[in-house]
Image (tube, rainbow, N blue to C red; front, side, top):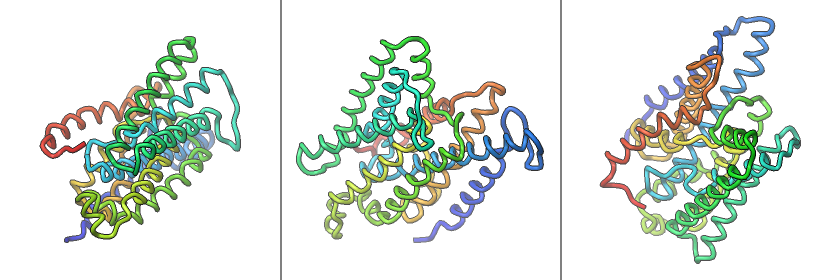
Length: 325
């Protein structure tokens, strides 16, 4: 098999270009040579924001790639198993109660969101184990059930909330990097490091999963353990992103699929390609969110949804004969 060196190099160069140029654009163009207040804006607001967007995009893309391998379905997303709904529920409860505190530099909203994401992971895992084993269909159905249940609770909380709390909940659920800083970047990096390394070590197993679980078993793969590791790694990354930035959809579905067209389906190359493409894609979307209607700002989740909706339809129509549940 020919190694996709050229596409990987192009993706790396594009990622570096986006990281270098995106901080320059916003309400006004600010060059790296700026001084005074503009220099402070560039250094303390725009650069950490771009880095946060790149890191979050990489995490969402890796999570989507792993879930698509686990379920053998290109329509699987990082939010398939209800982690996003759990995080949104945690944040909604925190906002509705009107609490305001931080711990170790992490906002209470982020802590509540991550607690909700962990609750969702535990419930999905527990329901799957109650059924016996750790089968993929049971995992999927448990995730969908938890997601719908938590979504209904979020709607109930919005209904009983006042105008201010309802607006804050809706705004948070749109996904944004408005409050991104180096502290939030530091909160994201451990999740990317742990989850990304774990998935990188499991590239062979994910390749076999794409062929079929029976083939993986025949090659000596401990299917149950690998499923749990993929589920844990992807869920931790998704929970970390949603806790810090809010739910940002479609990045995890689009990025791995586009990368398969560029570098093929081998996860040795698909993993780093998804990391690079997801990062540069979300960083570009965040740049658009800051500049399209400046000085106002569009939540980045709206930008990704506007791009992801048509892509989802295209993918559905072009792969309809190959989709599996």
